[in-house]
Image (cartoon, rainbow, N blue to C red):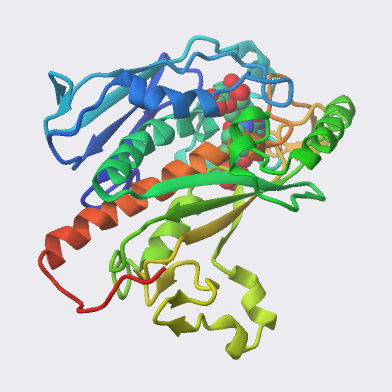
Length: 362
Ligand SMILES: Cc1cc2nc3c(=O)[nH]c(=O)nc-3n(C[C@H](O)[C@H](O)[C@H](O)COP(=O)(O)O)c2cc1C
Ligand SMILES: C=C(O[C@@H]1CC(C(=O)O)=C[C@@H](OP(=O)(O)O)[C@H]1O)C(=O)O
């Protein structure tokens, strides 16, 4: 195994480089009989794609997905689904100057160590261009989970630099460039990003993802704990440096009487567990949060070395996101969807017919 696959029963593998002819993925294990067309996947791809506002990279890609296999007469056949997106707006000349230099904070240095050479055009395989395929694959999982189990997965940006949201209005998330759910913060974020871009700087962000109506029982008790698989999937997104499930790191300074989520016949009284106990979903909303680092490709000079080990000053040209977190919401939703889909199918396979004798509490 090359470590290029996520999920066991619902398994996704991707291919392609940022400046190659195309990127793609194979989604294996999708149940047969689900209606599926490109239109079902395009909306989330459009939410993620580059170049949709002045606050993202100015690379323009339509990210128009083609279904190559696994669908016949509009329905999934149960065989591997091949998805393809052509790259149309590569500008590789921006990278020739840094072909022999390692951008501090990007993957150039480690790729060189691991493989002995690298596709420097647009970061090659290390570019977050690849996340388009995660969103496409996640779109299949989202659709199945919604239609078969009524599970909804949504996310939003909760912090950009030091600007923290104070309210969550789900209705406005897709109508501003940040996936920000607090209408009062959008103008502040815009002004902040405009100033930051002029400076040539970048900044980090935080994204929350929530899955609702998840049945209890999804997950495994030991290694493939639902929270462990979720953390793996979210941490595998480029630039993610932190993942929290439920109360996350706040648990350090919280007393047990407050942190445990007390149970009444009418439901849980809180959800610090983030909907997962013992690696298994409790039926409460599954909540996770990720921290994304500031973009490392900067036009402001920085110190680095070249492939001969000599000290150099590096300036990165090209079209870069000043805050990569701004486009990460649909990616985080997709990764949660892939993991929940995998565990939904695995739970059904092993525990079909099990009756806990309990009511489902939320
Ligand atoms: C949506 C998204 C967009 C990104 N855009 C850029 C970018 O324009 N320029 C850049 O240098 N890094 C960008 N990144 C981050 C790099 O892909 C990432 O830092 C790199 O792969 C190294 O991996 P690491 O940061 O996880 O160690 C982006 C990440 C995401 C999730
Ligand atoms: C192209 C996308 O984002 C890219 C992510 C990225 C990086 O280093 O991660 C670098 C930039 O592109 P390039 O590889 O051409 O330099 C971004 O534009 C995309 O998300 O579709």
